Amino acid sequence: MTADLATAPQLPFWKRKSLEDMSAGEWESLCDGCGRCCLVKLQDEDTEAIAYTDIGCQLLDDFGCRCRDYPNRQAQVPDCVRLTPEVVRTLEWLPPSCGYRLVAEGRDLYWWHHLVSGDRETVHAAGVSVRGRVAALEDELPLEDFVDHMVRWPLRLPKGAASRQRKGEAGRPRRPARG
Image (cartoon, rainbow, N blue to C red; front, side, top):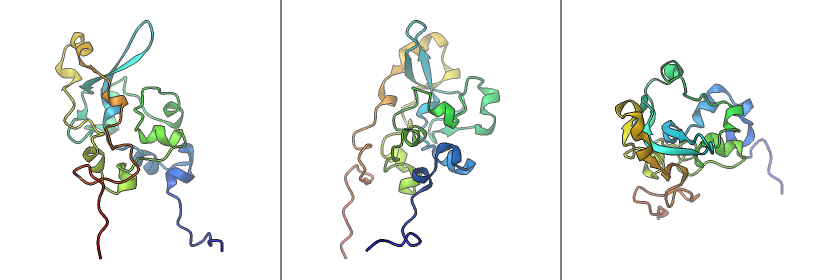
């Protein structure tokens, strides 16, 4: 027996639309709120290799993991990269957990993404966000100290964060309710 398409559950927009076909609201909602892309990155002049630091952009709210002045960010931080479908497909420094990157690569969002979990706090509970991991904001340190803050964790997922199973606050799988 075939399912009636009219009653079949509709796929979420990120599974049925290209990045270019998304509305502005859908596009913005792909951001998981981890703040990893708002960490300062250093580029080697010789090799052009990119290294993350644990230093946040001067506009990063390091608890909320969001920009404190998103609408005006590029006026205040001229090298802030505005993400577009074209840009997302070319940036190699986007974290592997980034919703934009995952959808551009044809992959699904992780269980902790607010569009899947229904809760903007799961990105923090899963240990994916920069909350509690930012050493300083870029305007608080001299530029020569940035190299001392190079880190690799923004390019890795914490244990359990890659699992497709939604996890409880303590990191253990939730038990089914007994009725």
